[in-house]
Image 1 (cartoon, rainbow, N blue to C red):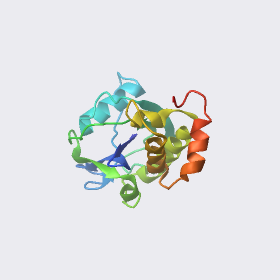
Image 2 (image 1 turned 30 degrees about the vertical axis):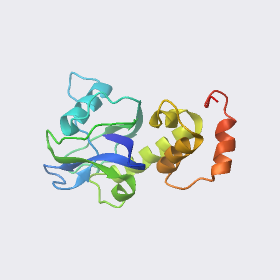
Image 3 (image 1 turned 90 degrees about the horizontal axis):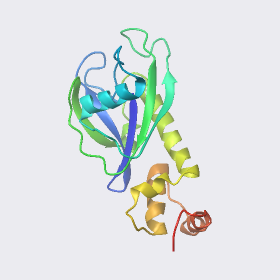
Image 4 (image 1 turned 60 degrees about the vertical axis):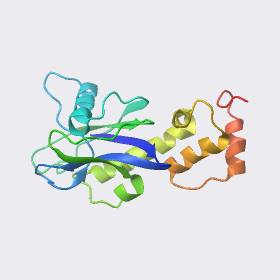
Length: 184
């Protein structure tokens, strides 16, 4: 399962698919699927993302998020999922494929109100928490800005990911105090 996040129109969006098959036909879900016997976890994540959404070669940040294995998470059988988090700028429009009826970028605030399939609401929440924490200790937010950007541009990225307004003066003081993050 993949939590793929990007900024669109200044808001944080997650990539969702509408399931075209049972269980959960018609429900929104994170892209994902089963690992084939001859592939590794990373390869399976990339394949499923490509097959279900047409999104390939995600530039930016991709990492394993967590494992999920509650016995009743999938009504078909016991399924253990290794979830991935991708956080990248400028991701393309998705195109549904494989067993997905639709694929779309959905504002995170809307996605959190949807009844997502399986345990994907929990996986999404965990992915959001990790992405928000990542901004605390990495320069990842700068990837969402142009080659040259202002502190206000960077603040807007943090505000979109964190889902709240930040005090401009405190933010300026904090980021200008990080050696190497900004160049005059």
